[in-house]
Length: 313
Image (cartoon, rainbow, N blue to C red; front, top):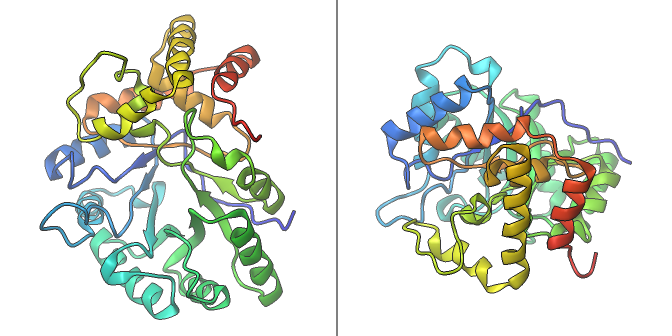
């Protein structure tokens, strides 16, 4: 193990900020953020590209809402603010020049003097990893960033970045962020073993599979949601329908929600520091935070895992 161990405390759940400026406007976003922190949450994840996919948006809308909310509070030191660089069309890639420009944009929008965890949003094969890591290292030495992470990297590229950081005396990636849930388990084959070897922790995104793992998407039902198309496709796999039945049983046995069980399963996985999950309303926040109170038995974990075990694992 190379030993890149994070010093960050993410709390029980990381609140996903991709909904702010999209399915949750500024006022509702403030209420969600208040409910999350008041309920014991501390880590908030966003990105400069959120929510550039909406017509008329330029990116940074989520960061701006979070920044305006932060400016009204006095507990900045108690919070972990996470954002990303590399995916926004106008600040694309992981060159040193782009990282240095993008971090200033994000700091301004977030109205803070430092980013607790700054992610490379996706790998950039056109930027030498030595250049990327050196740029991140300078930000850390300048106090603008506390730790750095890698999102959507392959095991091979994560390993080469770790080797370069060690050889060059640069700050390594300490946290990864990848798609992982009970219905998206591909990273368990190669990436999770690599994370363990490197001492890198995971904060998975899409942990509720666009809402599918809340249990509201069922065969023969219609749900009005901006994510209904993405969530509905999981019904095409019979194993996922079987999984819903297992989730229902475990949730009933534990006296909690399907959402909380799905998140608790992910939180129990090796390398996971905390799952990322979004909420459009303050009422949805309670279900997310309830996952921290769920104590799944080894039998529960085995039943849930078996339903969607990766074929090649």
